[in-house]
Length: 171
Image (cartoon, rainbow, N blue to C red; front, side, top):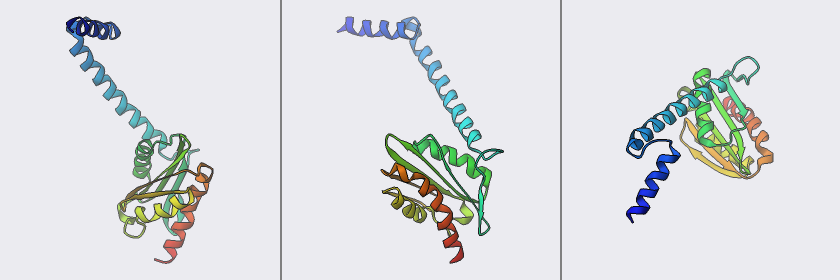
């Protein structure tokens, strides 16, 4: 038993290029580096997502800024992070992001606080989820949906403009 543990310790030390007695400090330094890199990646994702020259710009629909965009990144967490950066740029509006991953569609819809009562994200996402053959939910400012119809992602991303126009004209 002790030989197995000693072998595992030496193997870990070799992998990390450290002496066995230095492993705790080495692991702590590596974990701190990882946390720093993850924060930097999140910062860069937000910076890249912010509308700029050549990037997606919000459309004005009945005086409401609406930005809908497709991203290669179909991971909902990444889409939320990107959306946070765009929402900060838009300040007042609706942001819809979508992407594909592993044959599935993900949508993330964000509505700024000032518009959440008129355009609750959790209601809007239900209409969009139907287009991609899925389901969605959330709260008034953030909602997500997933579906299987990857070929209808662009249709769902375009549909938000009509949905907002329709709701704005009935408000």
